[in-house]
Image 1 (tube, rainbow, N blue to C red):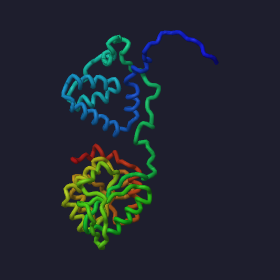
Image 2: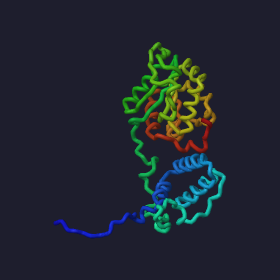
Image 3: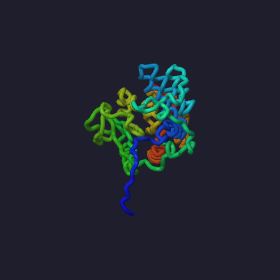
Image 4: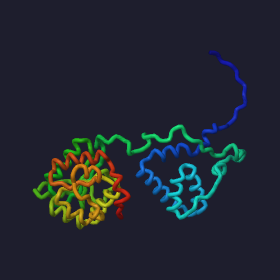
Length: 294
């Protein structure tokens, strides 16, 4: 090769593909599971519900209609609005001063791919609990033996386990074992954890039952479809939660792996089943039919 002089006129221009503002969003939405689509609808409804200008809300609904009719209709229903008829070429107003409206008009071609499983979190690998954060709720009088067995098994499997108590400072187990909590209910939030385990111990259970933040912690874990496991004598505590009437009728493994709730007196069995539950990550079938305040 050699240096060759080339003459030409320099221009600043974009390919027409830059004005396809909708096909990638449509692919993403159509690739989600029903639960994930509901989350997107709820998120859009929340964010647009904070917008005070009706004109802006309506314009966003017109854009959502270009992505998916059902998506736009669901958000419009939540906002109490009708979807306006705005022509595709009128949706993009990001036009430079020396630009032409026709040159910057949005396009909405059909994509070459209808769905992609890789875009949905439901399709992620669920054969490990490595790096998952697990909360163990405990107070003075906790069953230190089951707490230690469950914690050690989860840590050995690669999970991150935090003991959360009503206060920082050592708690004393029913067998006089000193246990150092990692967090208190004042500093820990349920949304930061992937699953919750509550060991037994009558005094610990009574303390947690009287701790509003502990009940809120469990309520939020249930609402967000996370795995919850407890020793058998913790049922008293669960009866004080907002979801006590929504507990499954039995705790056979098939039911547990569908519902994401486990109550067991057999610690060894609880550990193995709980690890499977954590590996599944979330239990989306619980979300809509079992909604609770939290």
